[in-house]
Image (cartoon, rainbow, N blue to C red):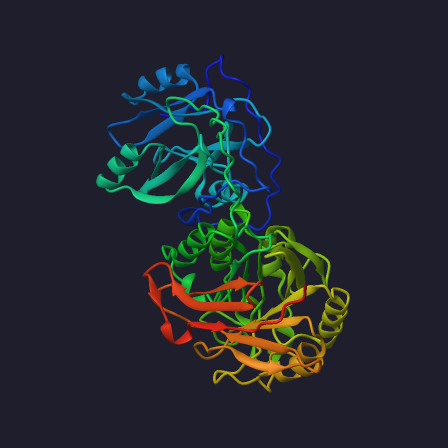
Length: 503
């Protein structure tokens, strides 16, 4: 069946103005839609907006399903074999409104599959890589949950997709062999939404909300290059989905080698971007520090693409920058080069203090170091955290070599930048070794600087180094944890005391 031609009573569709960039953007099977809770940045829309019932009908002969807010279309689909009427699946809005986001319906005639997405990147990927036709906006929903809005989850079985809004329907799909993909969006239940009653006693706000005078957390993602080699590997997406569910997570930084090597179809780049979109969709700001494997210096298989020109190719980040923009990161306040994410700084408010994550390229050029010094000097009220791909060696010392890739070594970066400013508090890196407990150095102003090497290169699970910061107590606790397997590397669990923050 092809229901691309809507009944005459159907409201006119709205088609987006999507700028299509690099071909083959994103792998559909690692969709970047995850649960999120309402925040000041993304308030949930009014419950009263979700008045329109959305129906689901299934074609028993092949398991395909159609979800639509128009009863006439459901009736028309029955004539084409969609005879299993599952009734009202959830309630959405058929008109735009404050806080509502559009959901597009994508259709592929073989195998008669419908995908519903609110992700622009997935919209482009489905059309370009998988030959889905964009049938336009079908309804409007919320990207965050609330007391009256519940998650609508997407499942996949082979090449078919389904939506499930109730726990019973979700359990039935899983029992029938459908694989959970993600939370596609939030909508009202089939019975409708009601505004939550105003409590007689106001609920006190959380004591650890980022931006207030309380504890908060942030995360450092190590080298993920081994997590994008196989198209079905969901470790990177799984980690980001887990991070999106963490309370009081203020920001995330990734220390480079997000991918292993670039290929003509840019498959690894697309997979990595799709997975990192999980954080963007959850309104968690992040940065990525470009590593040598993220550039043209590394060729297919992970070795040098052209050993005679490694130094020049290390600065060719054109493909990486075609996938990642400063606007994706969510809190970028400045860049070294316009239109490039190789060197950026992002500012945050968390725990009642001001923070900066300064993300620097691999073995940064002298001009980058000079720029970074100006950035740090002009933000004396910010606690500065530096993220760069190479800083420590495998044994935990400061790396004295640029390894033929770039310019400034880890030791030189410490001498020229890290040690010079009292508000630089931590440095994060990867590239070599496995991991180390905190290295403590003293800056020229007598301040303590804590450095963390977290490379891991794990072939099985998905480590992330978590930090819990309590500015009032002057403590920073850290651990390395893998959400996929529930593994904790106890050797790296550590609590720093007496940490002096800029207030």
